[in-house]
Amino acid sequence: MIAVSLRVVPHPANFAPVAAAAIFGGVILPRRLAIWVPLSAMMISDFIIGLHSLIFVTWGSYALIALASSYWLRSKLTFLRGAVLTLNASLFFFAATNFAVWLTSGMYAHNWSGLVRCYELALPFFRNTLLSDAIYTVALFGAYGLAIKLSQKALRARYLTN
Image 1 (tube, rainbow, N blue to C red):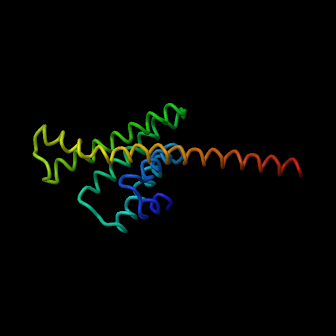
Image 2 (image 1 turned 180 degrees about the vertical axis):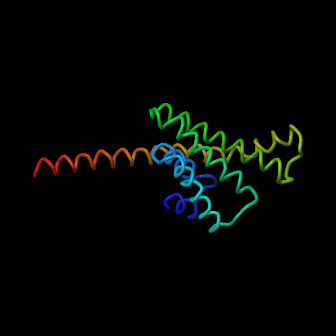
Image 3 (image 1 turned 135 degrees about the horizontal axis):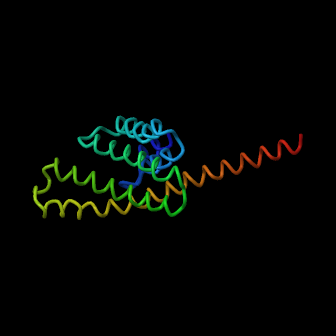
């Protein structure tokens, strides 16, 4: 619900927590559930802010990001592996969604220069994608790690006083 809320409230373009939620869910949840974290966030928020012609590309991209994180990060979660996957998730989403825009929108010529122009005009939005994916991924894993440490500390204190 946090991902939905942060996507629905006013925010800078492409500054959303959905990829981070997909990465986090891919590591923490069983694979079948991990895919539904970003998909449910996108479905609910897209119904609120409006459906668009590329929903299957965006939804599918986030599902693939969740799957990739479940296979690549779950077995060995390190900061470096998480950073590499987060960067690759941002790049993949940028490449997939802008390719779909080029292919289907009619805004660009269907040739090499049209494709390059599409990616070129999308670069300002990519900055926010990179920033939000990095910030939200660190925040989610950091909050999760802190919650585990605090709960372990509380359990130790409880059992030591009894």
